[in-house]
Image (cartoon, rainbow, N blue to C red; front, side, top):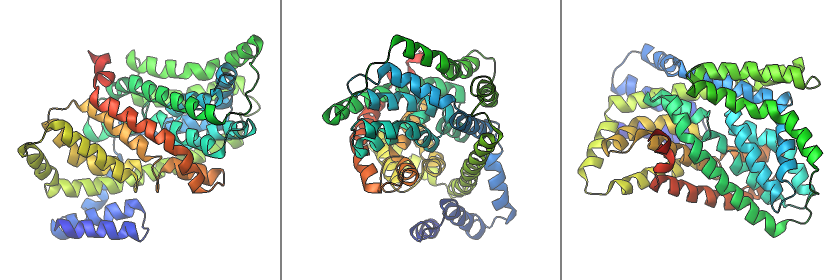
Length: 422
């Protein structure tokens, strides 16, 4: 019974069917044919998957990020960071990491981050003598940071699947996100020093001050959002809606030239497309996960994991390896919704802290976004900049190693994820 459903799933993936269809078809087979449930149960699973107050935050954060991109605030933020550190050794790649970390946290979308930051940074890096490989590589890796630094869409989806508090996950992600950003900055400086041919002149105090003043509204946004959540003023979902209002307000007040109806329409269009993709994936993944639960796969795996005489850290390492393998072939969101119903009970039964596990999961999914052949950030850069995929992959490899090392540190030093709660 289990094998037939898995074969349907594998065959549909191999022939290039959409992932949501592969998930829905295999899950539907189990529910309809094997379990004998009515056809209405298929449709109901799609509605149940998106019927969540927490998930309302997803389109709002995506819209806030797209508004930042098209209406100008993101550009001012990058100019300030570049003026501040761009003249230092390896400063330009480091500026890309810092800008991507901030913008990624605000937008919640890795693809939006690499397109927005890359459009500003890539031409300058190549002009300064950096290779295309390094320019695209640092952009691809740093584009993933917004999934760890709150507010994070991955954490919202994790919370909706496990009934954890998204605010707690946001808080837990602050230090690991900054730690991974620091790792990427170090790698960016090391790689950049090997090929840096031209360093821009140090910006004057006046230029830095002017760009800082212009960037203040953008840089203040995380304070408003996270401060409101942790201060108990509003929920994460309400914070996402407030983020949209905030970006519209600062765009209207400080970016009149770019605050146009056409740019607003672009932001809405990109948000609707991305949200639709996420929600239909959630529906297919929910159907798949529900079927797996009905046939008691999570229970069987949990019983097996508890019964074998193996250290818990070994099983955790195997789980992380599984995430990394899936990340080579699937996007992060279906991985999340396929694996969590099965693996989450196993991890809890082994005595691991659920919040620590959430941080490890997000770190592994970040790595999957720059792992060939199906890394979403790699494809976004290759498609947007019309560049050969091999160039992007080679450039991302040093940063991939950095993220893997950083993830191992997070696995074996849980204090980094949990000390804010102690």
